[in-house]
Amino acid sequence: MKGEEPPYSETSGELNLISKVGLTTYTLLLKELTRRDKCVSREELEKIATLDQILKDYVEVPNTLVNKADVLCFKTLVPIALRALEYGVDPYVVAETLDWRDFEELVLHYLSLADYEVIHSLKTFGKRYEIDVVAVNHTTGVGLVIDCKHWSPGYSKKSKLEYVASNHRVKTEYIARECWSLRNKYKTLKKARHFTPVIVTLTEVLKEPRKGCFVVPISAFRDFVINVQYYIDLLSKEVPLIPNPCYTP
Picture (spheres, rainbow, N blue to C red):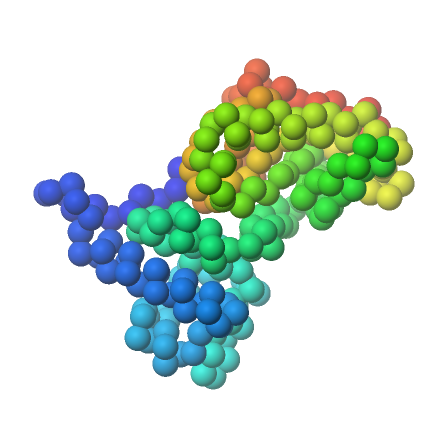
C-alpha cells in the first residue's frame, strides 16, 4: 500500500523545481480554502494554480466539487491535502485544514465504489461504544470495522497508535459478541461472515498491522479496499478474523 512519490531530481536528490512549485502552490491553496470555508474564486485560483491541476485530483471522487461560473467549492479537501503531503507540505499545516468529516466522506466514497453497504456511526448497547464506519460486502462477507483517525501529534508515536489499535480491536470483538442484539437496528451486520478492525490515518506514520488491527493511510485506503481479501489472507496471523456469530447467508 504505497502512495505516489513526489517528483525528485535524479541528479542532486533534492526536490526539483516542480516539487518546490507544488509545495508553494498547495500551501497557499489550502490556506485560501480554509479561510473561505472550502471555496475559492476562479480569479484567486488562477493566481495559485491551474484549474486542470486541481480537477485531476478529483476525478476519483465525483460529486465532491461544486463548479460554478466564478467560484469553486469543495465538499472534501482530502484529495488536495494528499497532494500537498506528497509535495512536502508540513502535515501539521495540512491537518489544520481538515476535519473528521473530510476523512469519513472519502472513506465512505471508496467503500461505496467497492460495493460495500455502510453503517455510519454505529452505536452499541450496554457498553457505549461508537464506531465511525462499519462496512459489509454482501457478496464476499467481508466486514470492515473502521476507526478514522485525524492527524494529531500524539498519533505520530507508535505507542499511542498501538493503544488506539488495541482499544479498536476490543470494540470490534464486542460488536461480534453483541451482534444478535445489534442486528435488528443494523440489519447489514448479519451479512458479514467475519469482522476485521481497520484504522485509517492521514499520514503514513505506520503502514503495518498493530495489536490485531490494520493501519492504513488514507492515501492507500482505496487499494486496501479493492484488494482487502489479499491483505486479509497475507496478514491473517497479525490480524486474525473475528467470526460473526449472527452471520446469515
